[in-house]
Image (cartoon, rainbow, N blue to C red; front, side, top):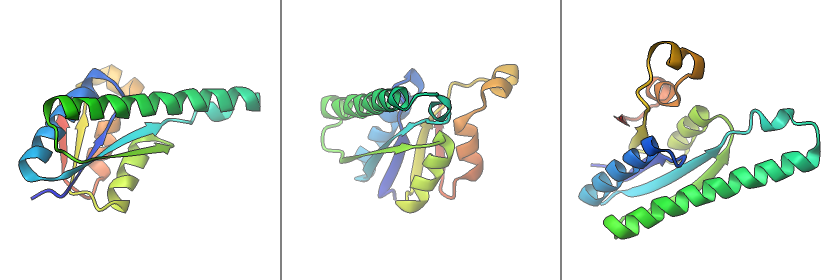
Length: 143
């Protein structure tokens, strides 16, 4: 049924829940899991000094690598046998998730959501919302 499952991971409790569901589905179907971490660089581009931008980008990349390692550790501990392919990209999270899903011919996106509504959602936006509205493949939303 599913050959490739994309899971955006950012280290949050919501993404952890999505990771667990994705691993469960992958184990059942024999699918490969693509672990995507997106370095959101919009605010980095506005910093004044090149050296500071480099240092901040480097720290954000290290954080992304850490999130993916923790996901791989979860797989080894609870679902060993699921193939995980790590992918790190820079840009707007929703755009990069959608773009990666199209580039890699993803069958399913499993994404966590905080379940915010009302004013909080208006202020912060929702990556999950944007992905649901724009993705060409099915999206499994985990709250």
